[in-house]
Image 1 (cartoon, rainbow, N blue to C red):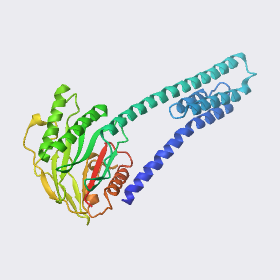
Image 2: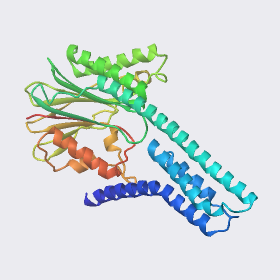
Image 3: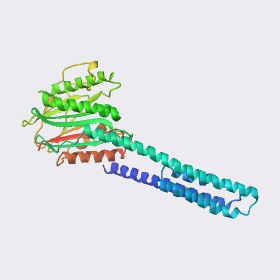
Image 4: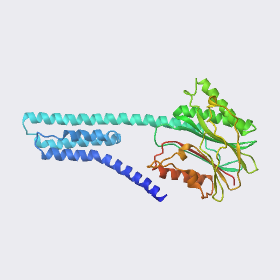
Length: 371
């Protein structure tokens, strides 16, 4: 653990040093150009160094920083070339062309900076809209539902500009507390649309259906209908791995149906850990055309003090620099947490350290504890 944390700190320090160096490059170019132009004969010129300085600043500096870099470059060029003002006419024309070139490049750098910033602002706006849409369809659950302690986390991957299709929902029903965690194929607004379909169908079915198996079949039919409405699953991001769980009121059990999703974990209050493996493999939701068979819920004891952890593959497939997967079962065995929120906080922190802060897939976590 300490070694992995050290790798994360080293990566962060390397990134900080790289940013500092990039911001220092324009200054170094200006200084190098001034020294070169001053110590060499008039037939030699440091124009390439001077023109490079504002161009390097354009994509990394603020508009004010880029403008100041351009002005500083022009000022240094004029200052250095004052010693040539009494040169022959040919040299004077060359120096004038040099100054005009540097001024032109400085102006172009300011224009480039504006274009880059506008593109970045538009990308940020698109991501904010997508995240707002996701929050609308994927609200945070209450801390207590049906007498159970609940916590949820959604960790977006750092790579990529759009959110993914991870989902979770918890609902108290006459049949017990019912949960779903899933992962829709794809990214962006298409995935958010599929998440809305799955969550909407789950909330309706969880209230109306008497069994967890019937809830799973309702989700299957909802995705099939949406796929047909959108001319097939290639247009609609309908392929969804999911785990559904049901915790009946007051009898200390949990029922689970797994449709091609990472296995849930049951953490005992004494540190014992159990992987809730599916008795039979099953296809993900939305793939009923490839084969059908009845869903069968597996039943496990859920004693007081135990915590049920559901997660997407963003947790179990997080890799470190050597390509080693994060294994939640191995990492959590023998450990105890005061509640579901501290558990999820520890998991997200460990995954960041394991990956060096650069996850490649979104991660949804849902933990439910029987107090």
